[in-house]
Length: 255
Image (cartoon, rainbow, N blue to C red; front, side):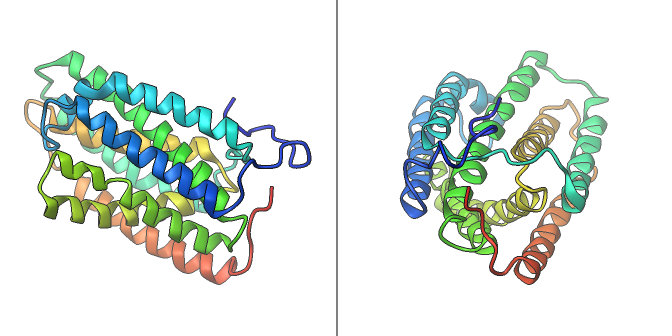
């Protein structure tokens, strides 16, 4: 059971409210990733090998993040629904999985590495979504409207990737912060418009990262629909933002 799934808003009032909890969670995960990268022996462009370097440290960070979610007493999984946006959000993930399938036909030189990628990307999905959609977004939504909570949590999600400068050039890191902030909008709106289905955004995040990274490890990688999938994510981020600010301008979560 995810932390907060069966939370009672009367008996489980959050330990911290609003910005303090949001900043704590964002800083905790960002600094945690900076520490995780200290175990890296490969550069960021060797993502699969990099995951193998840091997988144990990443597992520890994820467990600590789940502990923080439990300690916060926030309700982070609110729904098992998909909603219309959640269903549409599966389209770019399916495109990425088709791309992975196309690449996989040529085989992989290191089958064990693909298993590492499968596990590592699952850890990334659980950790990042628990921290930023689960704790940060829900904390901010107690002091501001849901649309602004999505936007601010997405910016903090993008900034969480700043420690990647330890493994790649500064320019690449700046670009990554911007792109991941936009991806954060996509994931944030998927979460909000599904009624708070954290499991959904965890799976979307996991399968996206897995298909992207594992495809590159094929003997003959295929571009497939990866570019189209990326465009679809960015378009959905904008659609979700326009819809959210139009339909949910003054709404927030209080439990």
